Length: 498
Image 1 (spheres, rainbow, N blue to C red):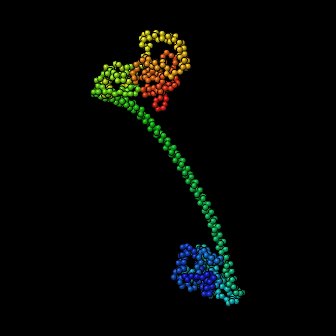
Image 2 (image 1 turned 90 degrees about the vertical axis):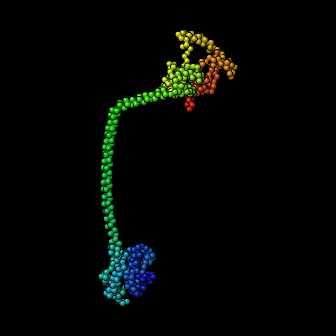
Image 3 (image 1 turned 120 degrees about the vertical axis):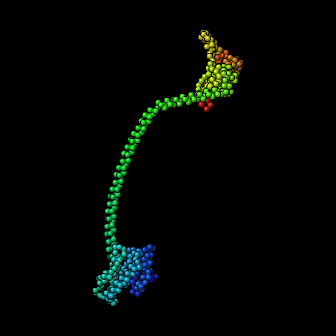
């Protein structure tokens, strides 16, 4: 296709001068425009090029805007075939067209124009008949405005002037514009009616769709509720079955336990008895086979002494050894911690093997409480105690008076260390019973390492104190207050024992 390079006015002038049909190609930047442009450039249309004045208008552009004010542009791309003399659009080819289709339609337009020219010849300047533009109609499929040969003839006779008056080009253009406007309004009304019909159909379709959707939702909710109720019933039934099964299993276990409890208990007791007998037999065999006995003595203060004895050594020698080793002059007992057993004097003549102390054993040294002086009096101890009580009652007023005066003079003449207290210390130590070192005594205040000493001959509470005193693994703190708190002990982990 040979495209004209000038403007629209120049193209119209050239088309009128050469009597060629104006071919306006409206295109844009899309794939359909490229396809239609390729079809126009096909060699098949080369014979039609001399009879056409081809002009291209791109969307968007100023020329296309001016062109659209006269000829409505409905579809891009499209081809307008316009008569150069009357300005009437003979054919509008909308959309993508093939080269064969373009050849066929353009050839028909050219042939119809030739026939129209022969049937409706133009008059002289004072002519009586004027050729009128061809009407074109756009089909519903969007193929553009189609004109036929019969419509062109009818239009020509309809707009012919019977009185023979010549119409100017301006009247022709105005008449063509009115015709195009009428066609445009008709199409707009038809399009509006079609849109209304489609809107009504769309609303009906939406109503039906919403109704179907509500029905589906109601059905889904109903199915969900039914499934949920079914699941709950199944879960409840399963829980009931599970609880019944648990109850049956528990009952069976109780029955089995009740049935086997007595035999199992008897078997367990039998096994324990056999294990104990076996252990005793093993110890007895070890004691019989052992030639020596390693004895560990644990003293009341926590210290230990270890010595190796012959298995045939009498127990009296063991007692004598620990008494000599620790200088225990008082009475004490030897005992086993586990099993608990205290060795009495009747065991002194038995050997260590006979007492199951071989090959090794741990003996605890336990001090025995000394009997009071009242008990040493035999049958007359009660009478002596009675006379001593009477004597204490008689002497009590004098003792109290002496203590009062002593305290009074001690307050007037203070002394850091009374001589009487220092002098009475050796006498007090001599008067104390011979308690073995490391053996706990029966009285808490007269134990070894006691920190208090009362001054003889006075009722005063003047005492000589140490910071602390020790009895075995227990340390007792001393304070200046003479109250019951002095008996509190500390067990080494910052806690106080009463």
